Image (cartoon, rainbow, N blue to C red; front, side):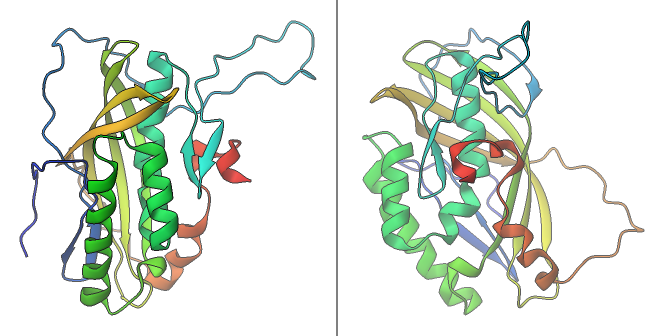
Length: 245
C-alpha cells in the first residue's frame, strides 16, 4: 500500500494506513470556506491552567484555555478563545493514540464528545472499519498499538468565536510490540474546529507529511517492546489536566 500524503474525504475520518509493520491514523478532510485573514501565533505546545489559590501573593494567573474534562481519556472542555481553539487542536492530535487503543464503545463515546455533530457518526463508522483493518494486517488488537503522537508547535491561522483553523506539527512514534522496529514520522495537521455545545469540536482535519528532519545515523533503533510502556503514559501536553487522573 502506498503512503497517502493527503486524502480528501466527506467527514473527519480516522483511518489506520498500514505499510509493512507501520500503522498510523490518517485523519483527513478537505478544509474550505475559511477566511484567508489569519491570526498567526506560533507558540510551544500549550496546556495552560490557572494559578492555584494557594499560590504566593502577587503570582500572576495564567490564562485558562483547557482542557478541564475528558471522555475516556480524550480531552474536552475548552474556552471560546483563540487559545482555547489552539489547545483543542493540540488535544486532538495528542489523543489519537488513545482513540486507536480504546475499545469500540469508548471510542464512539469519545468521538461524539470531541467531533462536531455533522461528522461524528461518519467518524465513528470509519474508526470501526480501520480498527478491523489494523487487526487483519497486524494480527493484533488495536489496544496493543504503540502510538505516541507528540505535538511540537502550533499556530492559529483563522479564528472567530464560532470557528477556528489551527495547524499542528507533530512527531509520531508508531508500531506494535511484536515488531522489531518502531518507526517515526513527522506530519502537519490542519484542524478545523467549530464552537458547539459550549466546547471546541473537531469538524475537519487534513494531514500532510513533514517537514521531516534528517535522522541521526548514529542512533540505533530500539525494539517494539521498549516502547510499550511509554505508549501508555499521559501525553506531556496534557499533564496536570483531568486526563491524567
